[in-house]
Length: 176
Image (cartoon, rainbow, N blue to C red; front, side, top):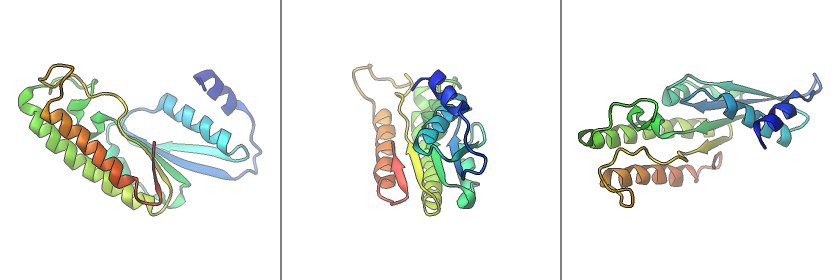
């Protein structure tokens, strides 16, 4: 589905008396098109329900998840980027790409991943949670050659793999 198809699908009328399907989209960025594609996908899955998507605070995925009350929601979708674990891993915030910062980046990413993970566990007890872990490659901040991996790079990949393994176990959690 492309953006035009998604927008056309969302234009189609849904009966006013149809049941509401409330989803919270948690991410650290402004989810303009992600919100549109998610709404269109949900509309295809639930054609006779009105889809309502709420979003969280820009740049604060962990805080958004920690403050989320899932009681009145039908589902939660979480999109995690590398910059949600540590801003220095993002393309948008340059300046922290120094070899001396790599151990601190790994430590901060580990702490942030645990905060996010704790919130996901809590939320998944109340409503289904669908989570997408970082899909883009890490930024080019590692000292090794492109065809090699550095220790810090491997530690970050291991961190995401461990989150994936632990979050694939609970019954209310699904990973993309």
